[in-house]
Image 1 (cartoon, helix red, strand yellow):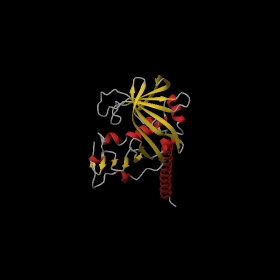
Image 2 (tube, one colour; image 1 turned 120 degrees about the vertical axis):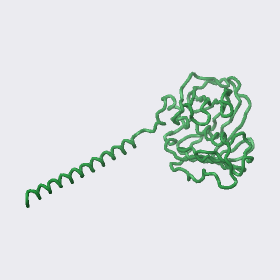
Image 3 (cartoon, rainbow, N blue to C red; image 1 turned 90 degrees about the vertical axis):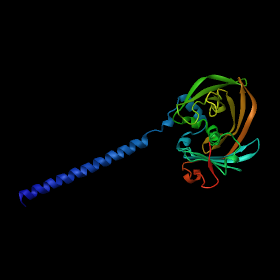
Image 4 (cartoon, rainbow, N blue to C red; image 1 turned 180 degrees about the horizontal axis):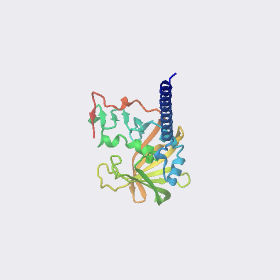
Length: 273
């Protein structure tokens, strides 16, 4: 074999070796990137320690972080009408099936079927995730852009509670000006009352209402109230009952619901505000 031929083969071997090393290094880099990505903690797990105590008192709240879908049945106790609520937690797409109407949110628009007149409330958009939000507290307050801070204890109806104020980053949700105060039992650390304002219709509204959480039930490792009762608030005391709802058939799933169920029907449905 001539020297030129041997030099050619040697050069070719070096090229192949370099290619193999390059491929190997790229594979290692990709594995490291994937490994780092898998180990990156969910930012929702980073909460103030005192708020974590509240979350822990409501069960293994990692299940909320890991879940992709959420559904439950709700009954308006004032008129015994029933609604079934379905939500994909990552996108917050949702649907409500009631006796006389169906409301959906496809990620952009809120729609109602069969027509706007089927819903007697002031705003379909306001209603579409109202009870989902209330029912999901305190877990939903782990969302990015939500800030929870422990403050001085507060008294309601002559009873003292630990208090946590909740605020929102600018542009968070439809009503970032809303104010929430969680009143927590000092022994159980569970949410007993929620004081809140509604600024969806009037951004300057500062009137607080009160919502009582009662009869917690386990749902796959997390606890949710079976009954929520809304009251007017007069100073440090509750006034008249505004509404009462009860819940059952609570399901959290690690698999998202089919996206098709959130799409507006082609017939007998309109976009609603």
